[in-house]
Image (cartoon, rainbow, N blue to C red; front, side, top):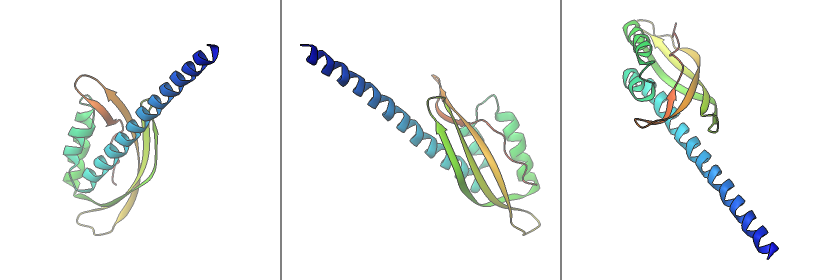
Length: 140
């Protein structure tokens, strides 16, 4: 009888551990999708839409001011590369380092810029998902 209880206890522990792994894996997949979606929107000059979709409403005004400044100065992003990314679902945080190639009109000189993005996981009644928690780079 003791062996039966040991077996059942081990089985329950194994099931609990596998559920945590699946939840963390889903969170990582969700982060990857959000990170790529956000950077793709920046790349295709959809900066305002990226702010509406991936920014906390409390922080959105500052983001939109920076986005307007970038648009006004004629900054065009030509490409991006995700250099590193780290997702910590148990803490609800993530970070990625992205390199952008861009030019500022009227110049046609392509420059590169490295941008560290900080992300947080939001789980509320209104929204559940990853949001950017860092401002846009200056694009000097």
